[in-house]
Image (cartoon, rainbow, N blue to C red; front, top):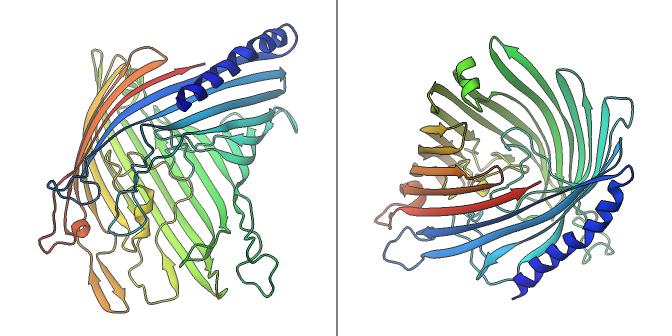
Length: 459
């Protein structure tokens, strides 16, 4: 009942805003409306125990509902607003994994849905000269494939509070940003000197990306070069408070339709990022060096014929691990705001938190995607192989061998019913190996996930 009431309130807000928007249209202001209503049916099995004989079958139906408006108040001033309600019909759950190793399914608990201000920002165009614009407030921010900054659209979106500035020129742009992700302090120790854990618990990120567009023969390509500094002021035992710089480059060439495939049949994605900084222990104030790296590579061959485009591809993604746990160095990739869905397979078993395991993860993939009528129908299959980046770890108890994690098969289909509506369906089966189950006769039955999606968006 409460969910229905919340959605009704959101609808009334839009209807109430129509007279305002119509009145604004009579002057210099122009308003447009947008929104989304998405629901999924999800079926999960063996996520927590790898055992067909145990009863851990879960079916649930998450939803996402957004209503927003964009207003052009003048030639150089735009306003964006959106309200979002999300939750799970019946109960609330998270299909992503815990940060422990071996990873376990997050607990499913009953809780109410959340209704929040999803977007609220002002954009000033030609703010300094003709090429510079700035956006201030709560906003979405996506770079490339979402390896560094993503929007996590498969779930409920990711937004950032702060400011973004963009300089646009003919063949390149420069984007700078400064976001506060969390702002606060520890009230239990803030006024109690001497204090090593007190003070600001702000989590913030700032930096810049340069975007360059150029042709390589008949192929139109894109190159991003970036550097970002992230500080997490929330004490997190045992790691403490990390402060590190992430810098890297991303070069890619997409094939979006049959014309692109005929112009040049090869697509690729190559991104590498490095990290360097330190972690300050929240109790002792001691500092440890933090390093990490990630590499994401893929290439595809596209064959256009009739109403079809056939794509055959291979790829790999590697997150660094820490092979020596006895030194004063913390190694392994620390993701910023990565979009994790599908990055390590459609089962989403590993998610972004799997890097918490010191050995890291390397995932190889190969597959096929068919596209009919410029993407109206898409279907495909992907094979994955998961293994540790470091297969041996030096610990205080000696050397520990880390086995492979397993393999996975994904199948998917998407039907673009209209420009505003699409249906999707997918299944994924992960066959675990000893690196996940622990071996020694432990259950090793497959992890299974099936998803059906109905998504309606309008502008």
